[in-house]
Image: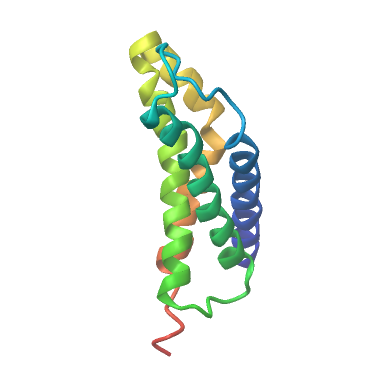
Length: 134
């Protein structure tokens, strides 16, 4: 179980770094044209930054040998696993209307390992006993 937790910690750290690098980059103007749309700025810049913070906290929780924070640490790790699943399954569903089912399955092949890691994170952290109750 410890090896799976360390693998998840590395995966969460990778996601945090990718999102931190991606948050400040990119266009400030909406792709629909016009000026700097507030909703576009929120989605394009604040969502990756917030996600990076969640993955960073989950990295810390997963890297520890035990959950000293009890339920709170467990929640951060489960939230990061759900966020990972949202990204790796949600993006292919978003693009299914563009290319149909073949585009969905080709993207799901690309996101196969991160999807499996998200599911493994849910299983590992939801089955872990709460240290505060002991």
